[in-house]
Length: 324
Image (cartoon, rainbow, N blue to C red; front, side):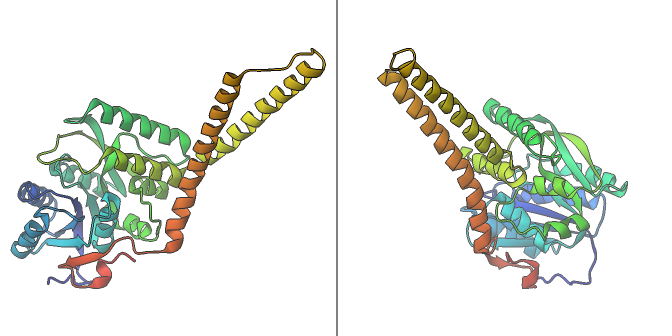
């Protein structure tokens, strides 16, 4: 196995989460290596295989045997995109670190531009999407609404129309390693840390091959992680709507008592009763669900399990690639 000497200084690390990308790993490496070589000869490429069911791991092993700058981390199962990126950040040593997805929707050719901005003094340089090719209207619309909703709900200034494609300074990486929460939302965590930030505009390409691993359920859970991790407003909303409904109910009770004893009328109506019960029941279920999301986050963090399990890696030092 290759070892990573602790004393060796690396100018640039690139972290690439991989999930069923065997068809494009060769092209991905070629474009990454060419792009990174334009800015420095001192670099490392860290591929994190997130439980791929195809031959992605074999392709990564082959690349690591052919190129000394290539390292791989293979998970014991699929732990998710954000955890895969976290594993790469745990292992990287670069003075600057680029995070980029392995599906080639984010162009590796943008890395020199990100690095140039970093050399101007920015600790975080994120790539902001100008156009999104090959994505459905539904996905574009929901993503746009989510980021704008999140911006209104949290005091943390999370950039809109951005993903995880960005360059961050090693000092940012060190602080990210001190943030142990299980439900990772890295773009929010990086924004929360602050530091000097800027952006670079780019056009996002469509996938080169295969299908996205982000199903609707995964996207929904990712959105929930972002909201519950950086905003308490859903809890405040639950409290306020509870007070509001209680107030309305109290007024209805007063009216019913007044109508019965003063106006000599009794409020009747099976339909109105059922509608009221269903409405209040729905509000209660939504409220319990919102509270449950926060309790679930607490539960996961209290259990204190490793974020990920490494099945195999060519990084020799185990402390450079563990999930604890």
